[in-house]
Image (tube, rainbow, N blue to C red; front, top):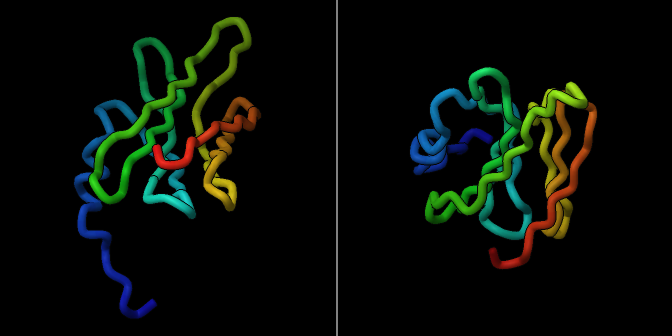
Length: 109
């Protein structure tokens, strides 16, 4: 731990987060160079849960997943927990609405 260094492109990864978006969780895919960032983004007049998948080698945004607020269920879609499966093919997200969602992550994408 004494020789830990900041990832060289950390700032470029963070600056991909749009304005009015808040990060609550991160996870790194154990089999590929994918970083998952999750949280919420403010949309007037409410919030949307958001997950972004970023390639750690290129800093390229691979995918954005949005979970909208629904007036019918009064769900608050903020994502505050992320975890990849050991084989890297599933991403689990958990949030303030009490829902755990599983997302498929195709190999090599």
